[in-house]
Length: 149
Ligand code: HEC
Image (cartoon, rainbow, N blue to C red; front, side, top):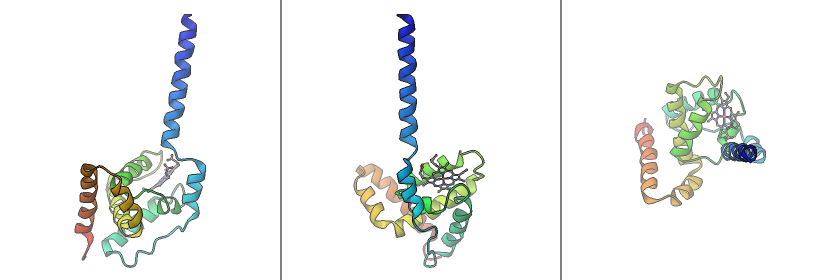
């Protein structure tokens, strides 16, 4: 009886671990969809300092997969970008410094608010009022820092 309970406990743990892994990594079809789109962004109309940050993004985020993966991903909100940049930072050998992570965040938040505006707006519209306010403030901060430079 005791052995059965232990076996059940182990099985439950294995199932829980598999569910957690699934919740984290996107499926292969989604990744392929991200990867297949364009691998560059035309940043010629972005502020100069944002163009400089694009170079850091380009260099850093194409080390392990094509740059097309982040470019064509469904991520658009500041919260999504900070989570994913952190996730990439902690991958072995990523070589992403905190300083560059911040610059890449600024680029991706700025870019999403221009290039993915429709997607960003639809995500904001689905949020609670308080969460939406926090996210809008973060987007406004990046624009305030970089617009008219
Ligand atoms: C050290 C290697 C490495 C670097 C550097 C890296 N990535 Fe990734 N990235 C991965 C791996 C591996 C995956 C596959 C799925 C996973 O584990 O999230 C991935 C997946 C992704 C995805 C798809 C979502 C997902 O979770 O599968 C996005 C978006 C992404 N990376 C963005 C970035 C950005 C932005 C940068 C630069 C800040 C970056 N990556 C740098 C290894 C890396």
